[in-house]
Image (cartoon, rainbow, N blue to C red):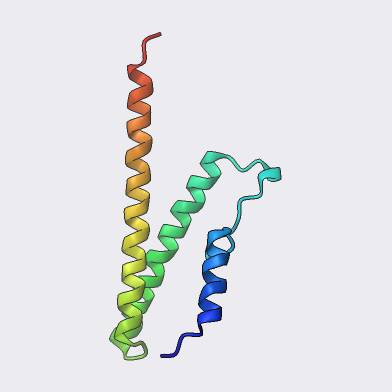
Length: 102
């Protein structure tokens, strides 16, 4: 596999600016709420899980490469870990708010 350094640098610069693949910038004019953002994160995690399931089925049928399955499963695992980490932080923040004196 050959990697073009120029393409890699451009991709890195795009990600640093929030314009990489899967990094849709939030439209601040639209007033996207925290709940909308969380819904999107959840939907993305579900989509990653479904993609992993489909890759696994394709591998069983013999139409997919094992590396595709491993990549899809790793992406789904990462998405799930991210959702769990965010959930834990939200719960921790809620508990801290509840402990504040009135």
